[in-house]
Image 1 (cartoon, rainbow, N blue to C red):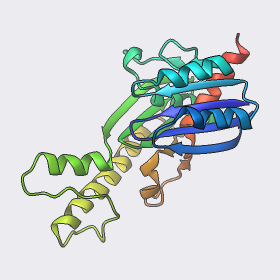
Image 2 (image 1 turned 135 degrees about the vertical axis):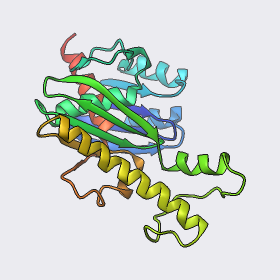
Image 3 (image 1 turned 60 degrees about the vertical axis):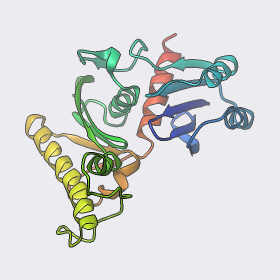
Amino acid sequence: MNLTVDQGNTNVKVLVFENETILFSGTFRKLKLQDLRRLLKRYDIQASILSSVVKNQPGIISLLKRETDFILLSHKTKVPLKLKYKSPQTLGMDRLASAAAAVSVFPGQNVLVIDAGTCVKYDFVNRKKEYLGGSISPGLVMRLKSMNHYTHALPMLEYSRPEGLTGKTTDQSMLSGVHYGMLSEMEGMISRYRKQHEKLKVIFTGRDSVYFVKQLNLPIFAAPDLIGLGLNHILNFNVSNK
């Protein structure tokens, strides 16, 4: 069995796999050592991988190194695709894992991954298994926070679906701008990629993807555990190529 740990800006997602089947899925605000110990006791975990976009917790790494065949994902890790990114040392490990998942889910095809989280990431892998890069823009919460931070009068709002396109209050106007602005951005990016790459597949993931996936009137593959799938793919690739 494999254990994957995806440490994002907001939450930590932990998955346990048996081959490609997910046996456990958990989201933690902060992953504690006792949480990991319970999983290691409950499941026969042989190998593990950690991806982090923030500062790593040395205690967790030490435990996984001691108890499993462990990989700390970095730009130097062997991956089942070719990196054409010009600054691989700056590439977020979540983006790398998403790209690895894309070639696993849709092998031999052009794939655009949209990850709607703290930021919205657009990552493209071509049919030759080449990761070419993508785009990054602010996510829902970040857009709301920036309007409050950089103005004197606009309030700090928690995101909720706007009542309609035309906001009839300041709060609703802000929510409409954030929601439909982000939706239009996604539609525009998909359209641009489709013009450049034939038979494009689109994978949608991330915490905030649930707010948009049904509104995108396009054929889309929703994969809430995409980064974990990619990490598992990278882990299996390294174990089998030792």
